[in-house]
Length: 363
Image (cartoon, rainbow, N blue to C red):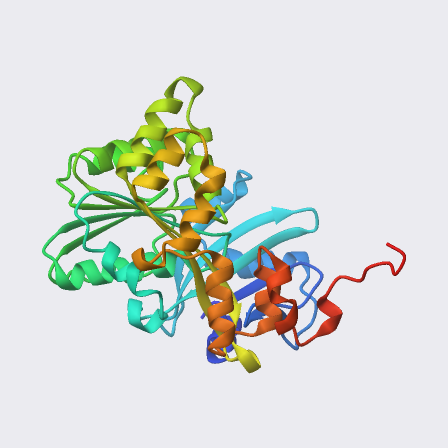
């Protein structure tokens, strides 16, 4: 049994989301969003590298030896599944293992807003799930794919880096392809998928202009496209899409977003009270005529006002969602304060007053 499995087993037994391995410190677990060291010695460079080499295939080992970071899925001896990133830094090898639950979660179990379920009824267009690294984007998309797989007869093609949740075909056929194993780039994967008669196309990350352009083409030609971006609001998502493509395609991109973008779901993970796990809190934008006009006239800065008043369509600002969750006692108010955009709205909810900024009495 690879020696790393012992650390992974310890982490999963404590419901940790990640295992971090680095030279000069003991292994660390991410528990409820915070890193906690395991009671173990500091890892030496040669020791950690030997741990990692035990789980690398020959192809991955060759790529890592050539100086590349490697991303892959790993299944431990006891059946646990993990998304792995192995890299080098100044002190030696580093690795991060993200635990992937054995069962694909449902939208109900994630307690996401009801409008997310409604978005799965669309047959064409683009839905973006955004947020910083580690905010549960892949989990939300997996739950959406599972709903489609369970309720509709579709051909679903999923392009991932790497494959995380494993979907068993139910009412739909689900084809999962992995970057580096089955396809060289996301853009090539989208191009190939268009010849595979897809109804739904999931693009693990819209990380470059070519992939974004190909995904927009797929959405324009009658497919439902789900994708992710590392953006932290609906406005930043739209601006990123427009800025990512060449200047001479700017008007075409704005036209697509106004007509082909269905929704943007931006999420953060906020601690529950008394460290009882974390809950996804979402900012949601659903395209309508008013937002489409703001995009086409370069007034995206006015979109937050539309989200604030669009509750009937399922829209909400992140701050609105955070305040509602605080009032329902679903999240820790101190952690919510850290994620808030307009922190003034949250000052009266803060329990740990040391979190609040201190002002000079003469200022």
